[in-house]
Image (cartoon, rainbow, N blue to C red; front, side, top):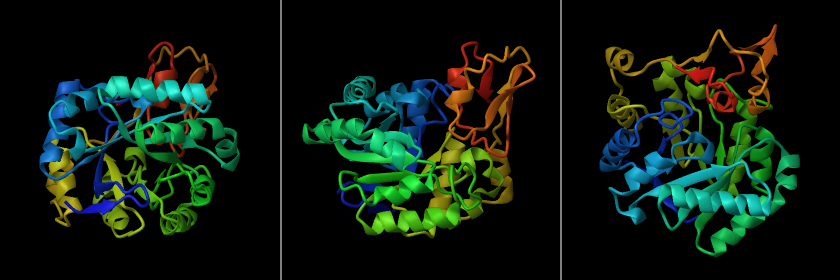
Length: 315
């Protein structure tokens, strides 16, 4: 497995990053030990980069995995929406406890939307810089679905890592499209930031084009690593093949990958608690029930977490 340096962070990672959103409580809710089996199988094949977040509900899964491998041989991330100094500090401490580790390699401010939010969240970033100085984290990062934030990232000298949405259909982008994002990523990479991409399959909407989407992403040298969610060892085997430039057969792909969709139960009360959770603006209440704009939805499952009655889920 090819490995690359994440810019000025100095951290070297595998080109393939295993995303844990898929196995966490937001989506599959996989048993942590079973998820750790998949993570361990990836590690044995050279994958040493694992992406998590507070909201994913996947910290227990990564915790189980870290019991099985040398801590200094893997790179672990987490993310939080907290933007106050004290709130971010609490998030970092909670993540450390849930992950069962003394340090987190990369901690990111989660899903920033604009230059305005970056400015407004300065205290949260200041906390992360302090946590880095104290050895609680090794690098400070930001994740985003917005080209504007990716453009601003190269101007922020406290940032080490950028984690942008990146797919050739521009699915899920809050502004602009992939051409604008490609330019922003190139600029950030040139400025010394490490870059690892997310949602190259548009949250699963492009699963039928996985070979094309992955080839396209791997051809971009500004992407140091590419995060991809994996649900089982069969998917892992095929993803590893494609990262190594080996093309699986159509039959193998059809047998391994299942398309995802969002399910809203008939008994949804239309309370609207899900609406503000969606940064894509994909969910709204129509005629007393939540409805999804499938042209905007990226199948993250955040709306399901917000539903007080558990009426929304990814299937």
